[in-house]
Length: 380
Image 1 (cartoon, rainbow, N blue to C red):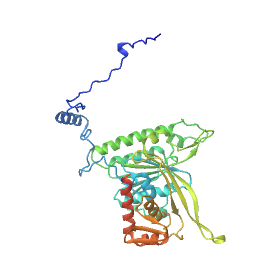
Image 2 (image 1 turned 180 degrees about the vertical axis):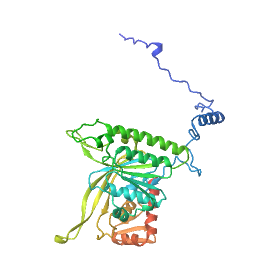
Image 3 (image 1 turned 60 degrees about the vertical axis):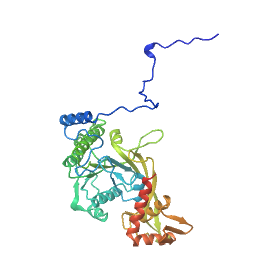
Image 4 (image 1 turned 45 degrees about the horizontal axis):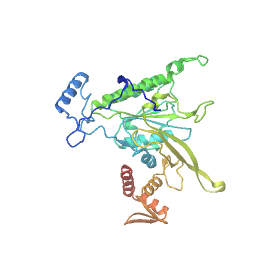
């Protein structure tokens, strides 16, 4: 016996929208009246301000497309490649990690590279642990560095917002988010309780204002402001699964375009017996979030903190030569056949040491290899 199915009421039936069809059977595209669209955009700009609405991405004062992501080197070539060419400018970047994972040092490298690119930078030293000799050793130019040591979270965030509104400063490093303290907590006695979630609430307000100010800068055709927040990694008590978290609440996580986590790897030692000395460390990274390139990229690089090392790397610097070679081999820019490293017909080196020596003597060759690797990454 056949079972009769009940028909759905007419009000519940879902009917496919009829698409306009041409004689050839293909779907026709609706005609766009550009004059009408331009009139709408013009009216909206009169109402909300110049360049509030544009057809396509806005342009800068010199006609440059602001929709194109500009990138800045981190000082580590391996990390640059994993990020898609460097950190994106005009975004919030978070760099977190445990102690001795070189968080502050890597941010100093970023400031140095930004100054080389002609950007004015600021350092908000909440922890108060950055000293001038260390910064100078990393190549920081104090003639174009704005330095602040705030006494509260409110002062630190307002300091950054005021620099952003000026339009004359382009990048700020906040060291660190976990060290910032609200005024209510700072002024209270140790036995007094403060309202829970106050730092997270203040940071949520800060990030909303930060993005609104960046939108305003883009309307004016100026470079958006970049903030790099250094953060610590903590562990939740009694948590299941991954207990690690970075303080500051969820607002910063949603605002961040890039979230990098650094970890301390193996120590780099030289010598044997009583002459054995630790001269550096391996820094491991994992990109937890990246809205501008592939996420969850991992890698590592060597960092040296003593001037007397066999690698010949300056104190507090990363081993750039080793990084360039490893990336070039990975992306087939350098062809390896046995013990030979072949860059091109005119550059063939037997053994890694000879190739590293050639890179140290020829800065042009280093830059050429870097650019070729970046070009290969862009084609992936």
